[in-house]
Structure formats: C-alpha cells, structure tokens
Amino acid sequence: MSFQQGLSGLNAASKNLDVIGHNIANANTTGFKASRAEFAEMVASAIGSAGGSNAGIGVETANIAQQFTQGNLTITGNSLDVAINGNGFFTLTQPDGSTAYTRAGNFKLDKVGNLVTNDSDKVMGYPVDPVTGLRTGTDPIPMVFPTAQPIPAKQTTTITAEFNLPATAKDAAGDPTATPPVPATPRATYGTSINVYDSQGVAKPINLYFQKTATANTWDVYDKLDDPSASPPVVATKIGTIAFDNTGAIVSPAATPPATGFQLPLTVTPSPPNPNSLPTFPVTIKLDGVTQSGTKFAVSDLSQDGYTTGELTGINIENNGMIMTRYSNGVTRSEGQLALSSFRNTQGLASVGGNKWVSTFESGQPVVGIATDGNFGALRSGALEDSNVDLTAELVNMMTAQRAYQANAQTIKTQDQVMSTLVNLR
Image (cartoon, rainbow, N blue to C red; front, side, top):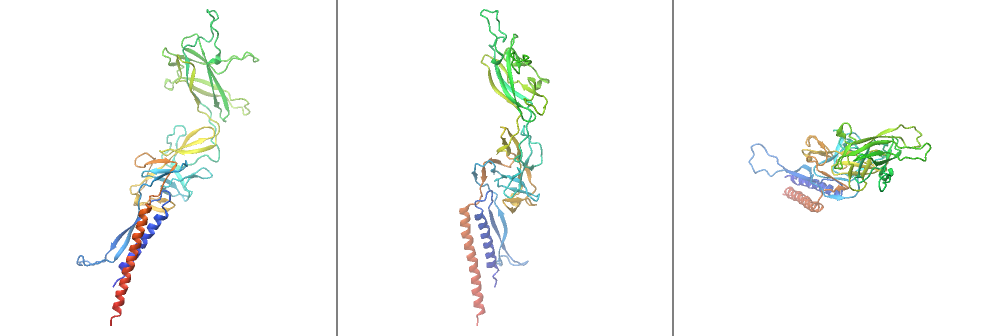
C-alpha cells in the first residue's frame, strides 16, 4: 500500500499555494507578470503491461509559467514614468555589466545624471543628434543627462527671418520738390531686433532696418542707425539689398548654391565689454520667408540658433521613446531614444527578481529597436503598467488549492487507517 499519491498531491498543492501567494503579494508591483503552476500526472508502467490497469503514482509540478498579458496603465503624471503598451521590454545594463529586461518603467535620475531603475540598473537607448533628433548610432548606450553641469553655450550661426514689407512704401529719401513735398522716411520705421550669442554665451542685440530705395521692389538692409551727434558722426553701412518680383516674392540676394535659399551675410562683433577679446563671428540671415505685399510691416517669425549656458530643468519622454530635455536657457532638445527589446518566446525568459528577466536559449536572442516600430508597442509617458494579477481569480484559486491540499491529506489519512486495519488483523 502506497502513500505516494497523497504525498505528491500535498507537494503539488503546496507549490500551487506558493505561486498564488507570490502573485497576490505582487498585486501592486509595477510591471509584474503573474505565474501559474502547471501539473502533470506521474505513471510508473512496465513495458507490455495491460493498458488501463495502472492507477498512477501521483502528480508533479511540470512548470511554473509566467503570463505575459498586458497590464492596465495607470496615469502618474511623473515625467520619468513610462509604460509599454505592447510586447516590448526596456533594455537594462545591470551593475555587473550584464543585460536584463523589464516592463517596469518607474525610472529615476541618479546623482550623475544616469537614467536608472530602483536597483541602479542603467536604462539603455540610442544616441541622437540634438538638433535633428535623428539617431546617430545603432548600438544602445546608457542614457545620461547633464545634471552635474550646464550644457555649454552655442554661438549663433543663423538668423531666420519671416516678415512682410509694405508694397505701398515710397522711396525713403522722400521728394522735397514734389507737390505736396514727400518727407523722408526715418530708417527706424521698418525695423526689428533679436539677440544673438557669442562663443561664450554672451548675448549681443542685433538690429535690422529696412529702407525702401528709389528702385522699384528694392529695399536696403542696415544693422544700425546713423548717429550724427556722435564724435565722429556715425554713418551706417548697408549690409545688403533685398529685391522682390512683381508678385511680392523675394528674388535676391540669392545664396550660392541657389539651393540654400536667400541669405544675407552679417559680421557680428561681441557685445562690449569684451574682456576676453573674442573675435568677430559670421551670422547668416535666412530670408526665404520674406515677402512684399499691400499689408503693413509685420514680423511673423524671427529666431536664431544660438544660446547661453543652461541648467537641466525637466525631462519628458515621448510615445516613440524620444527623450526631450528642457534647460533654463529656454532650449528644448532631444538627448536620446529609449531602446526596446522583444523575444520570439517570452515565456522562455528567466526571472531574476527586481522586476527583471534575462534571456535564455528558450527565449531566443532579443530583437532590439524602438517603440512604434514592428511589434515593440508604443510608450505612454507619465504612466506605469500595473501588475497583471487578477486578485479575485487568485483568491478563488487559493481556495481551490486549499481544498486540494485537504483532500490529499485525507487520502493519506485513509491509507493510514487501512494499513492500521491490516496490521491489527488477528
């Protein structure tokens, strides 16, 4: 007489309770994936034995299988929280240099600016060009941000101007001989200004004045006003001429090659005082958006590409994983793009704790990419993926496992009573 069946049933029910308890304990763990115990019968049979005559010798735990179903997304409002809506995993580099994967996107910045998890694993992503936002590498690297020191200043190279000059404007020189006389138009009538930056981030105001000439559809451009009261008197030098066709579209000055558009060159002297004797620097004024029409003078856009030094003030992660940073100098630029990994067989991943998995032979090698591409899924910033544990179902499963444990204990008790009866036969 054997106690094997009841003992194996107790072990299986106990293991099932362990799995259920682990699921319940992690019902509020970000990115957690529930597991289930899978069982198989055990049969001891000899070759040639009659089918159906073997009662079996119990049950075994065949596998503890994780269930990688999508968890609900909870909005947190924290800009460094990121949830994956899809099949991907965040790629991590652990402190020992090994690679791991996680669904928990509750990231932080450490004291040197690394984007990390709660276990100090570095979050991996692709480097990007801060200006164009395009990836500059194919291999993921740790995401690092300049929290310890400000970003350096950038010298202005280009001013982009979009404005309209009034087609009704007369020759600025006027005509005192006309009847009635036409007064001269002050150069400051049509003007605007913008700050540019030298190589050390010191601002220099640049003024642009536009003066209608006697030639039809033609305007002279100056960067200062005349100052006859100065000693010696200052007479501004023209920096260029803008010409339009009869439809009001700009036709010159055409840049070389023409594909670069309409441009004026400008030489900027750093703003005094200039104790470091910084040299003058060239700035290109792009005029592609300039028109001449019957409406009044109006500037619709005036921007430049330089800036002073700036401290990091905020980080935002977009749905495609692009990491946008904001700085105290008003600059917003892309600093990297989060890398995601997917696997042929996610249930082949090995859990190593801390909401992390590592790849195995069963899972296959990871395919690395970015959100919104392929089957990686999309990201939701300011949100976290909840545990996929169904607490109600787990409580019902716990009661079932408890009854199974009690039933198996009852079979052992019955076996013991039968054996006691046999031993006590006289």
